[in-house]
Image (cartoon, rainbow, N blue to C red; front, side):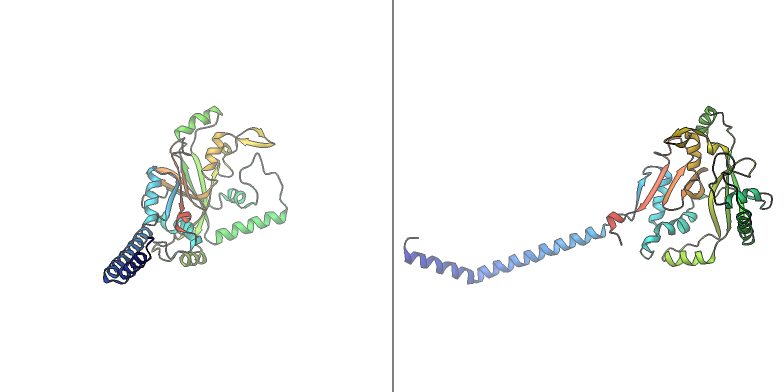
Length: 308
């Protein structure tokens, strides 16, 4: 490159090459290659987008037969038109009651007047489960208000229903340890005609799910004594205090957990399953290890599907 003439000649050759048809053809090929590569990336992205993660995921219960079946049932329905904050409610009100693998227990209707003392206990604004008799006496005005609420409940078609569940075998040993009877557990529930405004609200929130809401409204479950006039005494067995609070025995905690969720009672293959009144979760009375093997919780996959 020390020779100036050779240097100029070298520059000329380079310029000629860039302006030649050979280079332009090569550039055109590279351009096409780049466009093809970009198209391939876009195609891959669209395929990846089509493979979105499933909308429902099991927080717990994967491999548990009932939980797997329930997850499969939820995935059958299109939630694209459902209000984002109502997915759980739509599932509880429409899908789960129609799930063919779940059955209602054989509820017994209870005489409303005969069991008015139980209604009075249920409608009184104080904890249903407590040690001994109620702690505070109510004024006449408060008593009259409770009676009005009961009368209004009955006039609107409300009623009580009961179902007896044999005490699970795995709980019998624990009951005998505390010298408790191993008799069946009495579950009582208030029920009545479904509210028309509630129906309209559910249908407005659950668009796209082609199922009908139950004509029966149901309240929380309660464990009641054999006299059917108050709480189940086995649900209030304490074993001492901790930090100033009474500690329930393991037995009482277990049977209380069946009703504390405030949900509904279903039978799956004749095994009682108790639902939650808020999310989609169930516990079963089938095994003592229910927290691990017999607990099912299914959530909408917001984290992976981008919150709306």
